[in-house]
Length: 253
Image 1 (cartoon, rainbow, N blue to C red):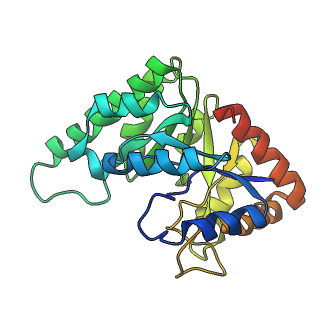
Image 2 (tube, rainbow, N blue to C red):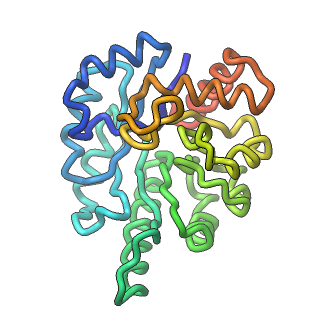
């Protein structure tokens, strides 16, 4: 049994969503979590989750989408029974503006902290997005980790300093593990505590080999599980059992 902890099924590219879900379940993926990204997509995520017993969603706003941030809307969706987390939220400094960089970063931090505080308020785990912002993200998460019930560093970027969060956070491992340029993730994977590993696709993005270049989908978590098993010298069944137990512990599903 595999759980895809991060799949954007509400993305417009999944115009064949019924067949995508069927393919996932046919390939051993038994549960899927849809992370929040654009606040305007939350109604669709809720609809998908309510229409499928083993699909859940999270309420959050990606750092690139914070112009539409509204805490009241987030809180409303976060109280739905199929909402099992807050996020994805975090910091992303990959595409910085040419001017007013400090104010841009400050705005991201404000939205990030607001969502962390919502997770604390509601007792929900946090799905975290970090890109080119390891130090700032670590500082903020360290301030709140004692009050959070837990969380996952989605698409873990192989930063050694983020392993400092392993007492409270899990590490989402996806298609990058199979990439030829994913050497850093391959090297750091054995350093992550086994009870902190979870699987994800980030579909429709980050498609694993041998399908890189095509649209990613939750069925492809199997390739990530195979690669993880190879690196950690475990069987595929052991990886599935381990990551499923970890996911159940974090999200309670």
